[in-house]
Image (tube, rainbow, N blue to C red; front, side, top):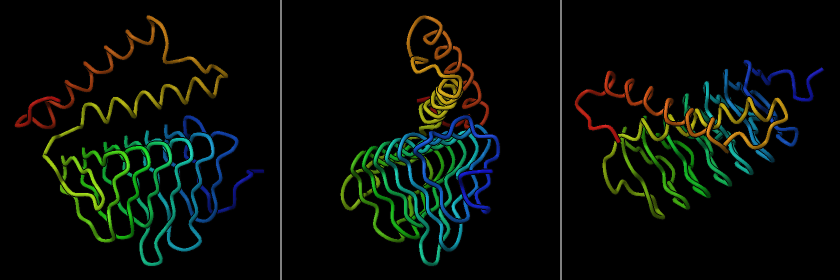
Length: 199
């Protein structure tokens, strides 16, 4: 029997650390990874973590009273960040210690910098870099490549942890994999965003 409740759906995640806490109506997508002491609660509404997303150590996700919390595919929620009743697009990076509050909408391929505070209802267009408290868009940058690569690093690391290997980010094999994966993602970027310059 699962140690999580009946409304927690795990759709073949890469890795769920034993200390993770999941309570309420939650869906975790294929290839996603949940790292030490991450907490997700959904006493009302719903939390959805998309495919190949990652929720890193000590991150906290909670629903809003009126809003679901949605985390897009290939998005990284870095250590100690808080996402509360917000919608985060695909291929985003929410930095260490950032706080994203109720009703926020973060567009695809964006970065929210470490320690940023996004107040309720903030809307961030796709391809933005947000920093500060309160968080403001400081520049436009399509961060698809870097953010997608980070998510795939966590996917690969999650598979390694599931196999009992804790040094997957070390050595020539890892370096070769990173180079090949970056090239693959850059090719995808060029096809999807031909008007942008690869980052």
